[in-house]
Amino acid sequence: MSAQCNLCAGRGLVIRDNVAEPCPCVKQRAVRNRIKVSQIPPELSKYKFTDFAISYYSNSKIDSVKKTVYRESASTTLQAAKNFVQRYLEDPHTTGLLLTGPVGSGKTFLACCIANNLLARNKALLFAVVPDLLDQIKATYDTNKSKAVTESQLLDTAREVPLLILDDLGAHNYTDWTRNKIFSIINYRLNYLLPTVITSNINLEDLEEHLGERTTSRILQMCRPYRLLVDVDIRMQKARQ
Image (cartoon, rainbow, N blue to C red; front, top):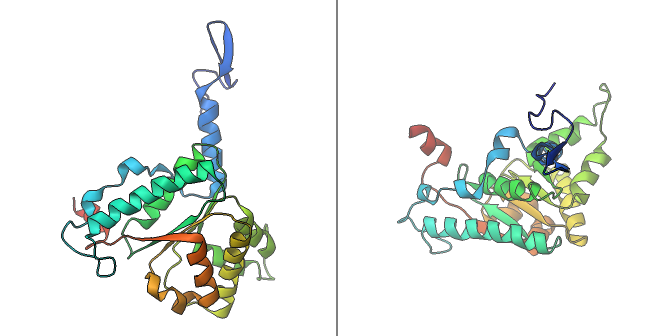
């Protein structure tokens, strides 16, 4: 059982100047509930734009594709993530984002910053780690297990949620089945103008090789691409500090 609020003793209301008003705990509880529904892991629910450290990105190494230094690309991508939040608040059918880069380059961090910022503003979204989502779908095929959720329900949720964050659309061994499931989600969201934020360790120029032409074409139509590059995995850099 959760601890009772000291201000309102669980009533949800406090009296100020003889006027009853909602206790701050009500808003905090609502945010926690939205985080739970969004499926963001507890640790990732703490990420904020103000904690995104540009210093982890080299100010001398140059992106061979964009011809910009890593730090400049990181700064541009950070601003793009902030801009997305503002655009989404103004237009729930705005263009999404595709954040690419190697493992430990800050892609998931920024995607979670977007999610947490919007959850705090009472927006509904789903944070789905692609390998986990695919495993959940496969689990519905097991005839020996009772199922709390069906394949159709999982896919419909990913297709129809107002904002979908697909994390780790990585360089896995994609089968025709995998590509078809991802295409089904992406194609629906494109057709119904539902924004998607995608993180991937696949280089932009290699997307088609892994995902196929039709899925790649739709992703590029619905998302603005940005790339983060680091010399060393940021998690490893933090561990050394």
